[in-house]
Image (cartoon, rainbow, N blue to C red):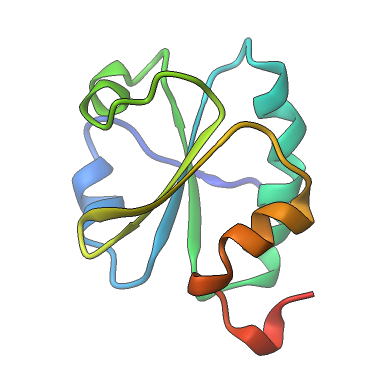
Length: 111
C-alpha cells in the first residue's frame, strides 16, 4: 500500500486539520535512507489506523520543509492538533519507529 502524498498546497488541510495524529515523512527521491524506511512506514500504516502516515517530497515542496525547520532527511514529524508533537530524525528499523510512536499507537495493536 503506497502512502498518501501531501504537498505545500494541501498540507494544512491534510495534516494540520486532521482529526487523528499524522506522521509526515519528509523525504526526497535522491535520499537512500528515505527509501530504506519507506517499506517500514507503509507496514506501520497498514497495521495502525489510529495514525495517518503521509509523505512530503522536500524537493517539490520546499516551503513546508522550511517552515518546520527540516534540515536533514528522513525527518518524521508527528502532528496533532496542528502542532508538531514528535520528531524522529534519521533512518531506523521498523521496531524502533514503532517504539518512538508508542504514544500515538493503540497498545494492543503494537508488535
